[in-house]
Image (cartoon, rainbow, N blue to C red):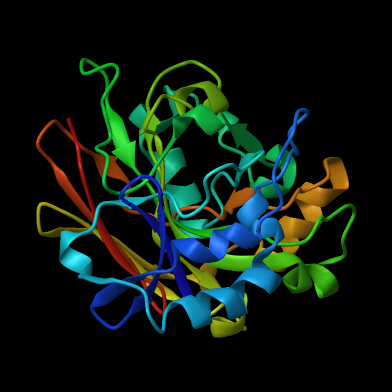
Length: 285
């Protein structure tokens, strides 16, 4: 099932080239009172909502996908977890290009040594919003990634059980401004985390280790790879992350980007595609 958030307050299913409005099914969600939970309520109740979405789709209003403004498919992630240099060729690229590491290649270490980092949830947008360059005098790069949405609370989960804790997958863009600041700060700028265009439930992608993906800027190919080239696989990333902190329902893991990262400028159009998920296009302002 492909589940989307669109037009700010609506929930839909993707069926072919149409979005079917199934917002009425959200009436099943329990009413929230303070203190609010630390997880995303829709993702937390996905098992109950999926059959309700299917039922609502029988009578829901339909719109062409091309007419809909897509929001992030996850509204309230507690954490955005990200994996640095998780493709071997990107590690080599980062070490070779001094503008990527501030002329200090020794700081570009393998992921087993650096671990993961967190991005501010305030940086999250959907593909209907543009990436806004906060420091136009500095270089900002695109990084396409497979994004994993946690569906079950995960605390010290071994890799062999990790896939059981996934709600689904979506496309992620981990935008990065280059500079001397800590990685998490440079990647947490407003609009520098993009998710979309929808969530594909885990049952449709039983093996996330064989997904082709690519990114183009203004029609020019920049990045192209397959998730089989990940240094740490999706299960291994969940194992590593959950060793240090509990992954709550709705948390998102950006799994890493391959070689080919490059600069975007105001007016650029970023086209991101991942096999079995779909494609999204984002503007830069």
